[in-house]
Image (tube, rainbow, N blue to C red):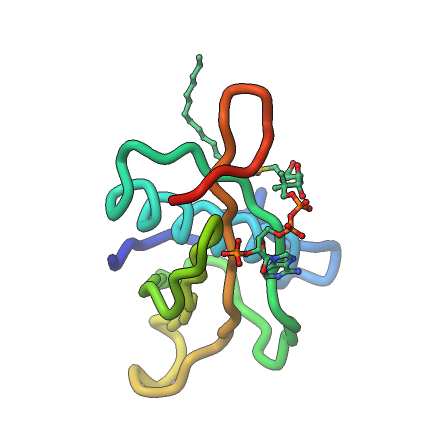
Length: 114
Ligand SMILES: CCCCCCCCCCCCCCCC(=O)SCCNC(=O)CCNC(=O)[C@H](O)C(C)(C)COP(=O)(O)OP(=O)(O)OC[C@H]1O[C@@H](n2cnc3c(N)ncnc32)[C@H](O)[C@@H]1OP(=O)(O)O
C-alpha cells in the first residue's frame, strides 16, 4: 500500500525539521491501514517497531511517499515493512525504513490467531 503526507509547519521540531515522533506515527498509521486492508476482520494493536534511525532531515513542504508491505505472517502477528521517500530527495533513496509488527487481539485485548 502506498500513501502520502505533506509536511506542514506544525509537524516540525524547534530546529525547523520534521519531528521524528511524527514520522514514527505516520509509519505506524500507514502500516496499520495496510494490515487492516489485508485482514479486515482482525483487530490489530502495534506490539513493536524495529530499530529506527533518522539519517535525513525533512524540510517543511516535503511530500512524503509511504510504502507499506507485508513481510512476515506469524500465528497471532503480522509484520509490515515501511519505506518512506521524500520529494526533496532522490526518488530511489529512502529517507526512512523500519518494520512494524501488529498483534491481532480480541475485544478484551488478548492475542488471538490471525
Ligand atoms: C467499538 C469501537 C470500534 C472502533 C474501531 C475503530 C477502528 C480504528 C482503529 C484504529 C486503531 C489504530 C491502532 C493503532 C495501533 C496502536 O496504537 S495500538 C496501541 C499500542 N499497543 C498496545 O497497546 C499493545 C499492548 N500490548 C499488549 O496488549 C500485548 O503485548 C499483546 C498485544 C496482547 C500481545 O501479548 P503478549 O503476551 O505480549 O505477546 P507475545 O506472545 O509475546 O507475542 C505475540 C506475537 O507478537 C510477536 N512479538 C512479540 N514481541 C515482538 C516484538 N518486539 N516485535 C515483533 N514481534 C513481536 C511474537 O513473536 C508473537 O507472534 P506470533 O508468533 O504469535 O505470530
